[in-house]
Length: 211
Image 1 (tube, rainbow, N blue to C red):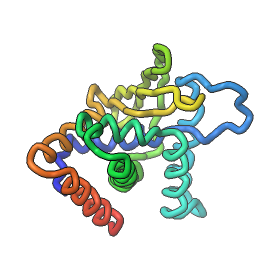
Image 2: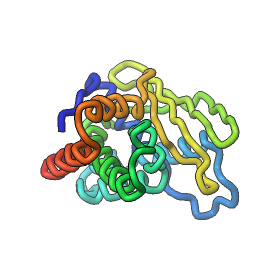
Image 3: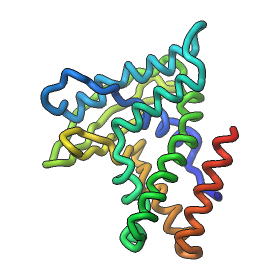
Image 4: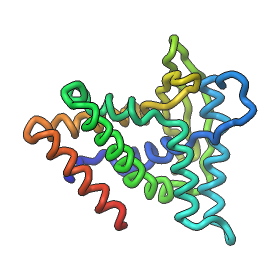
């Protein structure tokens, strides 16, 4: 699958931010605030990534399984897929929509998990600036500092889903994760069928799984 890429730094930082999310809290009686959801999990996620750099830490496979657990719990992949596909989502029957969600999730994870590992140096610090809540939607504004001697602005777009705040988009230095993919998918669908798009994603996922 031909995928137009942004600058390596932005992709790397986007991947890094996408996986900085928390483990579930079994004792939470009420939904944590969006900022708390992001803040409380950041160090735990970093610990997973950093622990593999020390002797006796988890294997790559173990680390990736832990990251996938976080992603499954705290990302709304249905919403991410729907927004990434844009208008074409409504034109597809439910079975095709769910196939797209599954493939899109696999594409995201396999594409970005290696970049997470590449761009985690162990020196990152995250500043949690503020949260803006508007009904069932929220944005958490953060900065990653001391990353190659620069600050990177990261916004988490979240939605209250089943009583829990979940991420449906991440914006790094003004570049939206969802908007980037929507542009790619729209371009492909202007020339090819939806089944062709699914095949492209399927082939790309298989290729990434071999790396």
